[in-house]
Length: 123
Picture 1: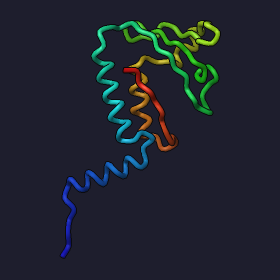
Picture 2: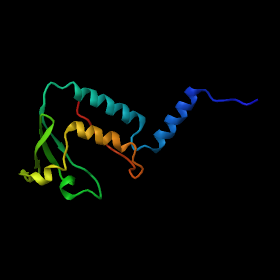
Picture 3: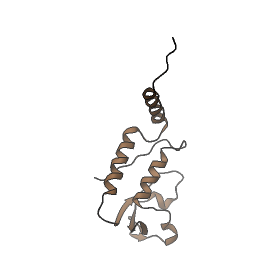
Picture 4: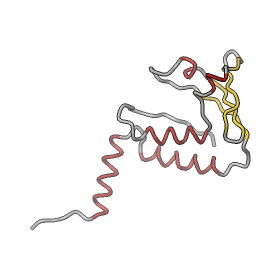
């Protein structure tokens, strides 16, 4: 007797296979979704955030803690925290908004060259 798996079983197997190869675990994807929802409900359009990227191939400026200022969905300035020095406009283009960061993180889950993504979200 030949048994065909039901569609829910195939979906479960597919999810498990994807979870094994993605740099984001299923729980991390859920946490990302919750953080995006919290961010989307914010009552302001001007903000700043601090970021440092740990990456062997990234430019040195990206590996330092930087404070990124955003207004109306545009990065308007970046200051290196350690020296309190503003980056020139040419370097500011390397930084993005929080919405851009969410999009970048979502995109990482489909990159085969990436092993892991570690992100923390403020409440």
